[in-house]
Image (cartoon, rainbow, N blue to C red):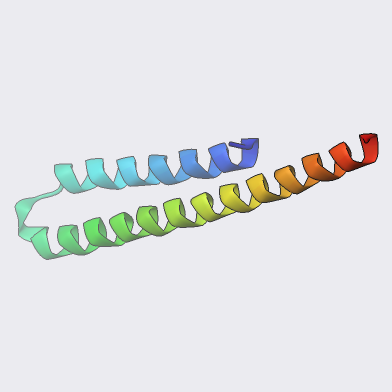
Length: 75
């Protein structure tokens, strides 16, 4: 992973952890709010993982193409 990807993953993980702790410490009278926030953060993390996975795949493809071109030039 690149430095930027690691930073994004760290920020998202920190936000999810903070939300989880806040939900765990809040009162039981707000179960509806807890459920909505929990679902929202879960969806956010899932979509972020998908996007990061796509970016990693694209970066790998570009790196492979560059390696192929370098090999062609050397040959």
